[in-house]
Image (cartoon, rainbow, N blue to C red; front, side):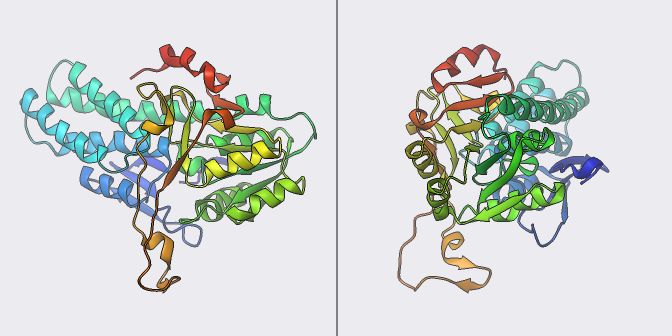
Length: 353
């Protein structure tokens, strides 16, 4: 799973099963989970063994294929009916990441449009899942290179800040926001990456930092509430984050804490970029207020390991995402180029389902 040049691949088809890097065990333990059933894939997505919008979409695509293998019938209509149930189960895992629904919709479209036997449909689904994975890797590399073109030209070597993990672990490989970082590092344009720890699940401290260490990219982990201070001290040249869903007007949902980071960046006149594939744009939503925000188990807030941090008797609120409004976003970096939020509508024709 860490093959050529230490490149990380979070989702791999191997030995007639899906192998996932168990991201809940990083950085202390590198472990793989083999997924043989669609139900197990749904559980892996729900429990964040696999996470990150593009990676979730790829995992779900393979989950559809696994479900197709489990359906024991040669009757086309019955097969498609049962496959719809598999799709519904997978859709129910994570409500905010639009790539999940986009990938499942693409898989189901293939299922309905493939002529021939049920086995022909199964093979078409498998090929489509693999195609999605290859396409996402190519997309991420294009996002990284497009982002490099719009980063500040001064200083010559930049210090970037990111939030959460939008790297190879969150995609088919290379990453979106971290793809921009990788491209900058490859071209000698990166001095250092600052990574917010990203409470409450610490994806920045655990996952982004881990990815950087694998490739020798200089990384400094800070707590989320240190970002404003770092900007005030002139330590940050630009902010690059990922997204789980982007509305048609450019409002972008990303890991909780992104919105406040964008406000602080604007206050310090620091460019704030969102890096995401076109498949992350939900043109059915006019603005970010329509994006569903997942709320997660409060234990993520009050407990670390077996240690409880807070007194008994208090209440908790644990939204997993927030929405950064378009007016705070300098540009949205996609595989087709970099666009202002108001220009996104021109990409609608490029989105395929």
